[in-house]
Image 1 (tube, rainbow, N blue to C red):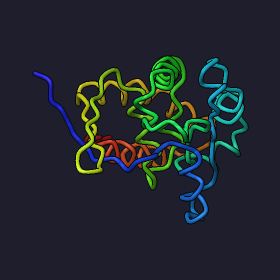
Image 2: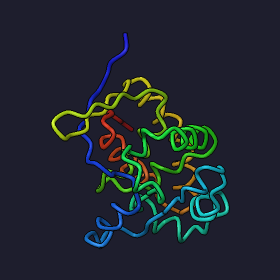
Image 3: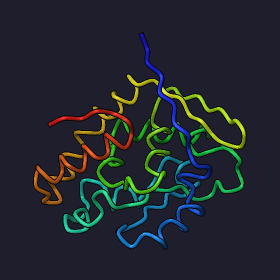
Image 4: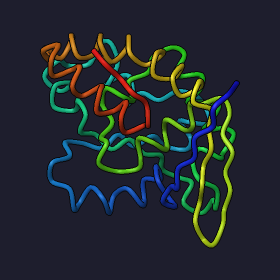
Length: 184
């Protein structure tokens, strides 16, 4: 039997133009990875690989771990949320099956990472009520996302020279952030 989970989401989460406002007020955040609409639509995102790929500088990785706002630029005029836009969902589902740096780099201090996670899930349902957005997903799919993301996150933690205890703590916080229990 499938279990559905629902969360109220802020409008505009994951859109670069909205996230910039958060970044200015959060000095603890180390960086911002902005994925551009044209890159999403072509599937070629050089910034992702240079900043969070296998050849990324280990020192840069250690700075970005768990403190990066990951956003998408170019959809501000689209009333849909990023996880409702088919080409964004297609990109993230495809990318996540190959290289999934989101839980390694993304910060849990804004809703942007959660918007990216929702875009990676195969099935979501969005409902707007009283000016608020509620999103439903299957818990099994969220758990599958976590399992799929762990090898990339572990590899990036190792490449960045981050000790296992710190990496595990970051991933446990990220799992709690997306609503899943996680134990060592």
